[in-house]
Amino acid sequence: MAEAPGDPAKTILFHRNREVTYRIPALIYRPAETTFLAFAEERSSPRDEHAKGLVMRRGMKEGLSVKWGPFTHLMTAGLPNHRTMNPCPLYDQKNDVIFLFFICVEDGISEQYQLRTGRNAARLGYISSQDGGRTWSSATDLTEQAAADDKAKKWATFAVGPGHGVQLRSGRLVVPAYAYHIHKSWFGYSFPWWIKPHCFSFYSDDGGRTWSRSELLKRLKTTECQMAEVTCQDNRQVLYCNARSLHRLRAEAFSADDGRQFPDPGLCQRLSELPFGCQGSVVSFFPSDLGPKTDPTSPRDAFPSTASLSWPRSWLMFSHPTSRKKRVDLGIYLNPSPVDQGEWTSPWILNKGPSGYSDLAVCDDGGPLAFGCLFECGESKEYEDIAFCLFSYEELLRKVKM
Image (cartoon, one colour):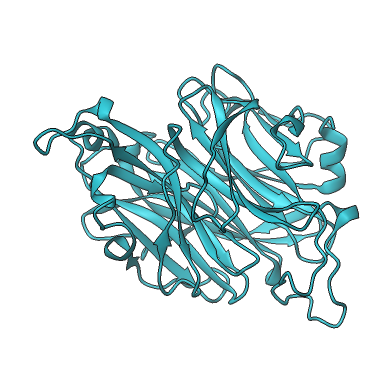
């Protein structure tokens, strides 16, 4: 679908052909080299159980354009006899390390089979890079450490993301996730109607050496989620969660303890959800005219701390198909008052036509504020291509109806 006059240019990064389909976009931005890393699943068909592995492209940002490098297969992102799914990258700016989380599911076992039987076949893994994504470590299997206790044994299955994780001002690393929790069983057997999905997060306070997880958001049925830290006018910092739900509206929740608990999840009347749902992306940012005041003696790339910054109120941005019926017309929404769900704007349609999953990234490199969006799109189906758009803060304000 060609972009309308005045819209940002759309670059196709992953294109479907007869042999492969690319799904599940994930995006991060590394300010140190003004570089985007774009990830996706490679599949032999659009079906989830036909996932093969993860792929990546690196893009160098130059003003409001990006020069993309070659296609790379991430060969270490996997476990033997498992398929790799749900790329969830996370940039640790404090240590300049990129983590790429994913799940590995036993070959031949679908999500529906796990839900029917109540027997989890997924494992949690990650790889990492200390050189901006040029090389990657071998895979680390975190399942026994973070997802194998008595509570996790009540999961029919689970997944991370998909899309990016976030680092909090405290330095905590947060990976969004969701699990299908078995609420009831009978002589060791469960039934699908006893299994309900709930989102949560994995987190680390020691740079990724050890991982814990938050409580499930049990009041609502939620699956794929993303999180963003927001700073309120009174300098309170809260972690915001936006999740795909089974309730025809997006689910929202706030945590005042860095994501350990999200006590009062609710449904957002301003953000609709499709009948069967669709993943969406959320990021927080400081508007250009309200940017954080830093200590001019500090290095520009130094990791910010609340002790050295005077934080104004941050905004939220959300991307999701705007139709209430099918996956079309990807929209960009803004909320200048994140704790108030009534402040979400009407959307700017970034991609007209078939549109699916998406992931947002904020370009916070000291230059003019800009944003990247990686999204599924196509002429007749939303999974034909994965495309990228870059747009400025000024363009965003012109397009969104505040």
